[in-house]
Image 1 (tube, helix red, strand yellow):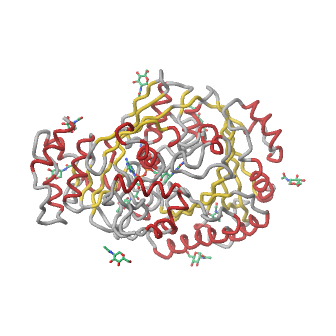
Image 2: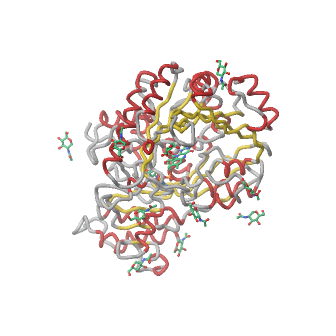
Image 3: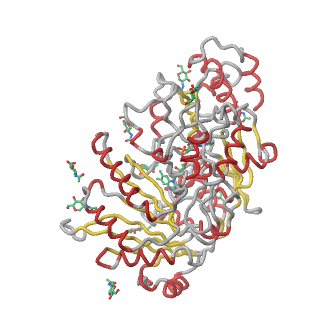
Length: 531
Ligand SMILES: Cc1cc2nc3c(=O)[nH]c(=O)nc-3n(C[C@H](O)[C@H](O)[C@H](O)COP(=O)(O)OP(=O)(O)OC[C@H]3O[C@@H](n4cnc5c(N)ncnc54)[C@H](O)[C@@H]3O)c2cc1C
Ligand SMILES: *[C@@H]1O[C@H](CO)[C@@H](O)[C@H](O)[C@H]1NC(C)=O
Ligand SMILES: *[C@@H]1O[C@H](CO)[C@@H](O)[C@H](O)[C@H]1NC(C)=O
Ligand SMILES: *[C@@H]1O[C@H](CO)[C@@H](O)[C@H](O)[C@H]1NC(C)=O
Ligand SMILES: *[C@@H]1O[C@H](CO)[C@@H](O)[C@H](O)[C@H]1NC(C)=O
Ligand SMILES: *[C@@H]1O[C@H](CO)[C@@H](O)[C@H](O)[C@H]1NC(C)=O
Ligand SMILES: *[C@@H]1O[C@H](CO)[C@@H](O)[C@H](O)[C@H]1NC(C)=O
Ligand SMILES: *[C@@H]1O[C@H](CO)[C@@H](O)[C@H](O)[C@H]1NC(C)=O
Ligand SMILES: *[C@@H]1O[C@H](CO)[C@@H](O)[C@H](O)[C@H]1NC(C)=O
Ligand SMILES: *[C@@H]1O[C@H](CO)[C@@H](O)[C@H](O)[C@H]1NC(C)=O
Ligand SMILES: *[C@@H]1O[C@H](CO)[C@@H](O)[C@H](O)[C@H]1NC(C)=O
């Protein structure tokens, strides 16, 4: 059955000679709409004349910066139900000279999964989100269109002591997340989502359906962290589930400047990556009002933690390693791991697990983000200078920082094991975020330049040569490809930041897998061309 659609595509049309290359009518006619199964498949094609076009397209635009009238739109959105539909879309898009943008959860920070400058098709994986958990072998197959929430829900329903080390936000798509690494509360114990992928199903540029054995270890290496929309369409992933105790403990402890926040952050830099791997303490920093009237400004550092054990043991550990925080029993909350997943999703902590299945972000706004890795503790004056910058801006433009400690398992995995290279020696990662509302250009410009200013301010204190960045926090400020004609040197500017020395191997794999650079974005690994 799977093969038959492809066969129809290949046989029914003149594959080589296409009179009108840039013809989206041609693309639609090329899709096997009019052969067997036709009625069903036509329901998976959304062009601007269909009322479904707008709702499907907008459904997972997670950054409203790319939900404007000026944002380029696809000529068609295809929502495949199985691999054969993906094969057809890939073959027909090449034939009619259209780009493909693959979208799973739509969280790409720069909108690359649904925005392109050249005529393009969005391949939206929304209908491919099956999760099959095998408790016996502690593994699961998860399709790319599933969200992390759907994955956690299924695992939680199957076992209270199995989990998966991926991100905290339940609406994030498995497809993009695993393609760029993927981290969350279990990172210090089990590494990244991509570290725990053991097989995958991929449709390549020729429309072949490959698994780990047939794609080979190079390509299998590359798709686990080398960035999405580069090597093909990942249909599903086989993952190793990990063990968690029946009870985990969380805390969320805010400290304002007046409560020694700066000293605590300073100290945390030395401790966070050295704590036992069962314990992760992250710091969220934002400006806040000290009083309800808003007349006294401060900075609030909130220490958020997940501990794989009970509260008593956690208090003991914290007393030993970070007494300055002054953690008390009342700060701690014991939960199951799946309750933790709900707790950090932004929903009330006692919400039904069903909220994990909700694919709509709680709050959708416009945002810009950046990332940095820190390998040496920053001096206190650096933080104080940062707060001064926080105070100089408007309330509505308040930027925030999320700082995640590394160490533990992250230190033990070699830099070249998968493309994600930020391993031993990283103390923590800084995630810069700034949100705003509305389409007004001056607000957007002010916010973006503000966050660029903070990034520039931190230059002396963060990793250098290269200044490392996390590919899942996509940032086009780091450099972009010149579509269709990208030199190695040009791509290496951003590529080394995301992948360090793994960039070269990614280029080799790309050259073998997709020499014509069909799967491409402003920041995808280019093949060797004329350089
Ligand atoms: C609110 C929010 C919370 C987040 N929290 C975390 C977190 O806790 N931890 C973390 O590590 N990251 C986090 N991220 C970042 C997130 O991991 C990345 O944005 C990730 O790439 C999103 O995947 P997606 O499928 O939702 O996004 P998409 O926009 O659909 O895809 C991202 C990229 O992957 C490509 N792609 C998508 N599906 C496929 C596929 N099936 N095959 C090949 N390529 C594909 C896309 O073309 C695009 O280039 C968060 C992002 C947001 C917006
Ligand atoms: C793919 O989907 C089509 C229509 O939705 C269906 O007819 C076909 O049987 C499916 N093929 C496979 C292999 O599941
Ligand atoms: C879009 O419109 C075409 C033409 O009327 C129709 O065949 C197709 O089924 C529609 N798609 C959807 C998703 O309804
Ligand atoms: C995206 O833009 C459209 C059109 O302006 C609007 O109707 C829709 O509500 C916007 N989406 C969100 C989540 O705000
Ligand atoms: C949860 O597990 C039960 C029992 O194993 C099963 O009957 C049910 O269908 C599962 N629910 C979901 C949503 O998977
Ligand atoms: C701040 O630190 C000082 C000593 O460094 C200590 O005396 C004081 O109690 C701390 N304040 C708070 C609110 O913890
Ligand atoms: C601080 O207070 C002012 C005035 O009440 C209010 O407008 C602003 O939104 C508050 N800021 C934050 C971050 O709470
Ligand atoms: C959930 O929490 C709210 C307040 O935090 C409380 O009022 C409510 O009773 C709780 N519901 C359940 C089912 O525990
Ligand atoms: C899903 O979440 C969104 C955003 O919070 C909310 O508006 C919507 O009602 C929720 N849907 C369901 C089915 O609960
Ligand atoms: C604060 O906002 C106002 C209006 O939105 C704007 O005019 C002003 O320039 C902003 N101030 C700064 C420091 O950006
Ligand atoms: C690629 O770039 C080179 C040098 O910048 C230029 O000479 C060449 O014409 C470009 N080729 C295409 C196809 O744009």
